[in-house]
Length: 301
Image 1: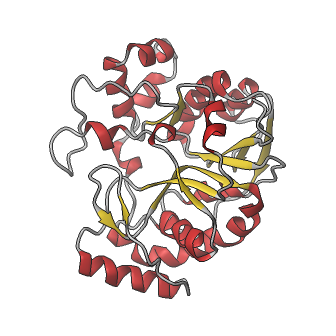
Image 2: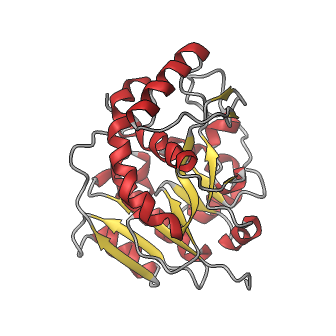
């Protein structure tokens, strides 16, 4: 698509064995939808001969690989994903993606949302501290520790439209590459600060990136839901904290990126979405994905 802009993709993953089927699923779905001009930037600490890494690179030949050790001193479960901004891209924008994201359509529709903003990102699914007084107190503490000003704004969360202080979802976001250096130099340091409040389910890397967006004055635009569709935000069965999905949950037709989060949610969606089932059934590593232990999705505090 001739837009005068270009978009690369970045993923980061460590040597955790449970990621192996996710890597292969990402590879098999992304190879069909990645744009011809896009480079896939892969950051990992796996051996160059690692079977899952080789599987990925063989299916997406237009790639760059960076070998980086895990961050020392960080305790967050998702700490390695911070390396996704430690890349060298000559594109205009970098699409940062988690491994548990499946592209259902071509990524060319991303160009339609580009309006000159620095970052396109979505709010978190739910407000993590639903009490107004407690939320204000914790946000003040966290931002003071980062030596930042608390954003003078409240925003709507995705699932239940609660209004609260901003906390952005770092699973999928689009960042202007001119901001990569600033992100790379500060994201891990600020995440370490935010880990002091991890017991409040603050998602330290998300709190850190949110703070950077506002305090570094990056021009912000919200990423439409079709580019980071989280099934639990639409199909939760019953009330929170239930993690079960409703029956007959049809993925919206305009969904470009399905952020399935949990293997059991993806398996459930396949039962009710024939197109998704047709795309994935028969992949010989899915059984390993279904057997992913539930505890790997939980933050350790």
